[in-house]
Amino acid sequence: MLFRSTTLLAAAAAGLCFSTAAQAQDITLYGLLDMSAGSFQAPGADRVWRADSGGMTTSFIGFKGTEDLGGGLKAKFVINHFLRADEGSAGRFNGDAFWARDAYVGLSGAFGTSTLGRNTTPLFVSTLLFNAFGDSFAFSPSIRQLFTPSLLPFFGDTGWNNSLAYASAPNGDWSWNLIGNLGEGAAGAQGKNLGANLLYFNGPLAASAAWQIVKNGAFGTPPDFIGQRTWQLGVSYDLTVAKLFGQYTHVKTSAAADTKTALWSVGAAVPLGGGKLLAQFGHSRAKVAGSEPTHKTLSIGYDLDLSKRTDVYAVFMNEKVSGLSGANTLAAGVRTRF
Image (cartoon, rainbow, N blue to C red):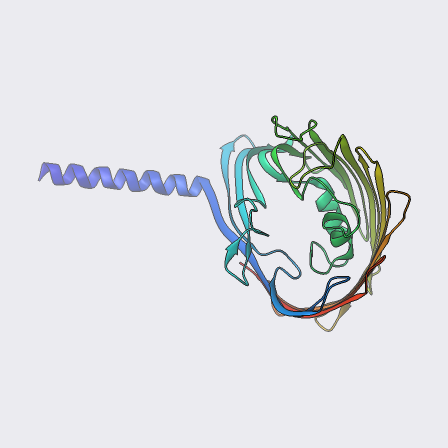
């Protein structure tokens, strides 16, 4: 009888401890699934009818948590992995890291937030904030021409391994983000990656300046690679009847043959019938080996909110690249968050 009472008391105490811990630490499972279907075409390629994952946003699933440490200090962690819902595969592509979206642990407080692990770059954040199609790799001219270019290669990916990131504490209309990583002796690594952005939000006006240098990248580097420097300016203005966007980006790669790319993009998001009419035009020009090829992308779409978590969309995109036949893509999809 005594043993039974002792066991019950121990179980109750353990349950109390677990309950206290559960209240002190907040852990969330969350994610997003985005599927589209239609006629897809790349410049110089044939038209293909297919279903695709990640039309407006790359599909992902993840876990995040915070723990209140007292005195305004909190511990936090995030682990997210991209997925391809059309085929049930992990990652954005074969060989992609499992937790490629984010994987970090850190501390936040009055000083801001500092995280260590795999972090999203400030340049990617600035790019997605200041164009009508956000972070869409399928349809955003800004994202497509900078991060998956048809002209000159872009190094460093949207997130960096082995990185330390810092986000400033709220300071009026201004905020800033810093990131740095280590090459850790990887083959072809020429040193550390560094990046930063400065963000301004005041009423209808928002602006951004971003910069980064990549000396070790996820997708290989050219012969005698020294580094790739990128800077970007972005602005948006909300007229209520329409939100306008503008971006300018410059990329310079120092290697055996130095190359440059200049990119600009303008767009608008117009509230219409419970959703938004979206339009964005992007233009990039490369300078390589005495030639100056161009890449032009025009995307027009409509995104309808069915609820706070779910929307449906339809997009038409036209692309032209020097020396290749033009391409037209027409697709519709659904995106839901959880």
